[in-house]
Image 1 (cartoon, one colour):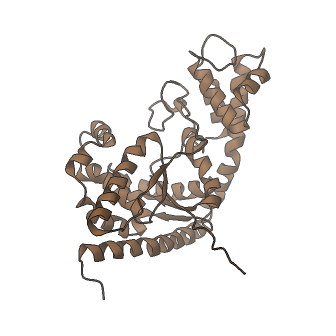
Image 2: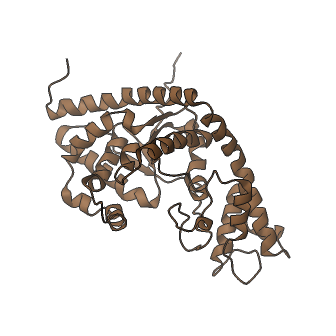
Length: 337
C-alpha cells in the first residue's frame, strides 16, 4: 500500500514594528488577511523591536507599545498555537546573521534604498548607521527562517528584492544555504486612503487625527471621523472619477460588508452622503468590536501573553539557530563546544 508524504507547507515571515496602533488601513489592507494565511502556510510573525530603535524611542513607551502590539496581533486573528509569534530582540540570531549578511552587502545597494532617503529627510538630526543598514537586518529576519514568501506592501518590495540578491550572492559563493524568498502580494488587500485627503494613503503619522481611524478607536470616535470625511458636492453615492472621498468610503464599506460597488450604489440610491457616512462608521465600528474586545481580554492577562511570547521565541530560536550554524560553518568559524 503506497503512502503519500504531505507536501511541506511553505513558510511566510512578516515583521511588525511596535510603534503605534494599526490604522484601519493597516487592518483592512494587511492585518485582516493574516489570519486565513495560517491554514495554508507555516506563518512566522515577529514584533521587530530592533528595527524600531533606528528612531529614538522612550524606553518605557516602547515596552508598553511592544506589549500592546503583541496583543493586537493576536486580537486580529494570529493564533500562537498555529503560528510562531515572538519579539525580534528575544532571538539573538537576528542581529548575528545581520552582521554576516552585512559583510556580503554592497554599500551602493544600501545607498539606493528609497526608505533610507525618506527617513533621513524626516529625521535629519539622527541619520544613524542603523537606519542605513536596516534592510540588511530585514534580510536576516527573512532568511533565518528559510522563508518562501514575504507578505509585503509596495513600500517594502525593494527590501525583499535586496534580501533575494543577498541570498543569491551568498549561495553563489558558499553553496546552497538560503531559500531565495518571493514577495507575496495578498489577493484581497484594500488601499485605504486618508479621510481628510483621499489622494494619499491612511497613515497614523498624519498630524491630523481625523485623517485616520485606529483599530482601537471607540465607536463614537469612528462615527465622528467618518462623518467628517472629505467628500464632493455631487451628493450621489457612486464610484467614479473625481470622487476620491466617496470612492475611499465605498472601498471601506465594500471590504467590510463584502458588497460590490454597484450593490452599494443601489443600497444608497436617493440617499445623501450623511446616511452613507453613518452606515460606513457603524460598519467599521462593528467590524472592529470583536478585535477590541479580544485585545482588552489579552491585556488583562499579562501572564498568558508572557507565556505566548516566551514559547514563540523558543520556537523561533530553534529554527534561527539552525540556519545561523550553517552560515557560520560555511564562513569558516570554529564551532561551539
